[in-house]
Image (cartoon, rainbow, N blue to C red; front, top):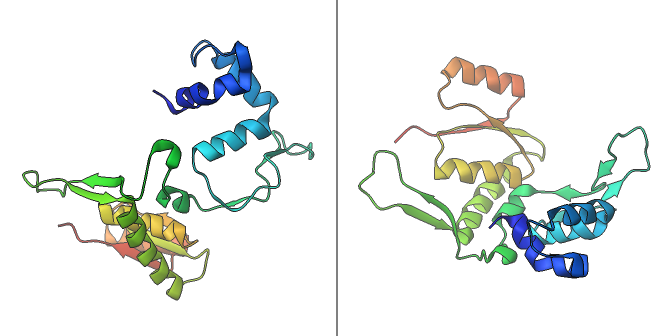
Length: 196
């Protein structure tokens, strides 16, 4: 079942009344409702996705400035998406004990898979983010030159959680190219990892 289908099943009868039948046949009506009732619809979606704003938006859509085609969505809002990734998600039954990352180290195919809970991931991400916070200012650029490992996920989320800017560098680049990317991006630091 899709997220939208689940949202429609849970909220369709309440929002559309007797017109609601099922997610497929009522999709058009639900879409029309979402366009005509943006405040209601988007509050529902944000709650469903467990989106937590650092600063709440003044409104969902501000269309008062006609020079901004399409308007301004969520004006005044401040969001740290890494924080949202690390929070339990009640509507999806995601708790602190839920698995956040499942992986197997390269070259260890005969070994059991590794698992990290949401709570463990959050703890490790916060440790790295707090360390970065002692050395850098919000908005500083921090590079990552790592293979796609569990550690890379932790570092990536930590950079965002700390309010820094991620500079992604392919782990296949030669040292000179890495240096070029660092200079162009004005990165203040780099996370890297030797392949295991």
